[in-house]
Image 1 (tube, rainbow, N blue to C red):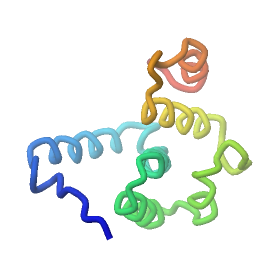
Image 2 (image 1 turned 90 degrees about the vertical axis):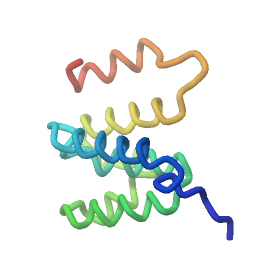
Image 3 (image 1 turned 135 degrees about the vertical axis):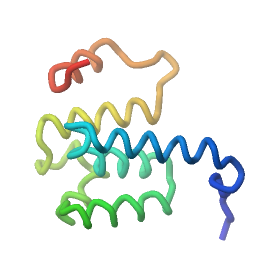
Image 4 (image 1 turned 60 degrees about the horizontal axis):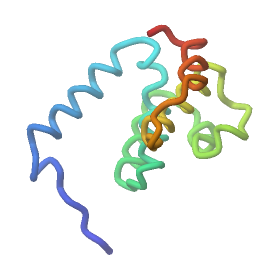
Length: 117
């Protein structure tokens, strides 16, 4: 088993800022409702088993249905997500795997259909 870096030990200030940002975002609607799905999808894309496990547990504690958690990885094919959730998941994927050319204007416009700036 590969040991991963302990970011909190190696860079406690940066790690604490990430936690602080996550906490602030979770207090702002609609991110408070979408936060678990967003964080879970980003963790899946990043391949972090620790984070996936943590976000699944947190989501379940806050009432997220287990079936929807299983479907986050295949959200495009699933009918379990609202248009707002789908836009959030698409935006999360784009930001997590930022393409060399950046975010397309069409994706940005699509996100603005569901969210304000």
